[in-house]
Image (tube, rainbow over all chains, first blue to last red):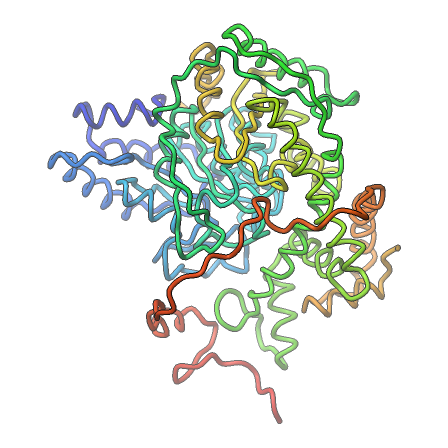
Length: 484
Length: 95
């Protein structure tokens, strides 16, 4: 059952080939058998999953088929889930039992989804390798000496090893797309504001966006269909109608104009990575798409702009963790300031502290204009580059990541080098555009991913492009060995 | 500008983080790496450019002025490290 896509499992449940309980037990069993090696889950919610599965079976028996009825999903541990520990990969929240459920999770549950558990992640979603988690690194199932990417590394690795047939993630600078690429799965970051952020622990609020990871574009369309939509509890969640993503999948790509920015193929890019992305575009050319060369000159400043804006917002968002109302508190504080300082210093890991300090510095008196304001101006230049490009093309494509999965520990002591892992994904967050990563082959036995970027609210279009690509290729059907 | 131990101590205090002397050198070096990379922003010609905070430049929507928040005290107070009589407990602030 575990080699089937979510779409196939949905058909199997409807046809009565198996029950949701059988399906859920199968995946729980796989997690027990294989996750010791991968560490992709922080919490497995077995009891709750079986309860939800039984409810789904009753619904199916009564003819109540919703979008996700009976389908097991793993949620990133950044989403609050009522009555279940929600750690955000941090010691700070190791003891935090969420008192409410995030809207994105709630909407999937309302469509009948079964929650398998909560997946491992970089602490507070700050990382590109899953090595900053308080619960230890996740291993890449294609080579367990390598990282799965991050920050949604548990989601991508668990999915690739078929420990869950679908997963949620969040993407602030590439945290869905980069791990999707490094594990050979499909991951979509929607338009900023397409999915509610309510109940999703905040990192950088003007960039954070939730989205699905799946074994195919069709599976991502199915999950996004349930997740997307207005939520009055999140004032940045856009009140726009949700398109029919599933209905758009099969459209032809004949005449589709694919923009190819020279900045996604810099001279120092690994030739194998460049060739891999070009080969993916050639496949779409065979189906009638046209390639259009273009330039996005300002995106070369997207990593520096991001590493001002994201830490600045993080330093503000993470000020709520004070050792008073919830989360970690130090032992025997001698006064209130000692309570704040030691609780935060002991509760946060090194990368989180670095980013809080960078953000605090960038926002402090005398530096605000030189850093934060300037970064926001550069953000407009980047947004305008994309807006100009989308007057001439339908989608923009290039490699998702400048490299395949790297060795555990390879960049752990070199933050700036680690930040470059997201060099092709970050500009999309600054512009607020939707983008996905789809598996496009292997380089030395490790998966490579190609990114498809769309204009605002064009999730349906980019899912359609990826689906047409996946109809003609089988990269997305490859599974790592050793997890039978 | 280069980050030294004084700047680190100042930012750490503003962020209410305790940084021990043994950590300062390593931390200054890493923060200098990061800010060195960020300094590429100074190349950009942005004199005539307005800052962008929201990619779609939408404004905050208004909603009806009515009570929507339920009383959640009994639900959230058990999450506190220390509480008493319906209040959060912290070390004595006023002697």
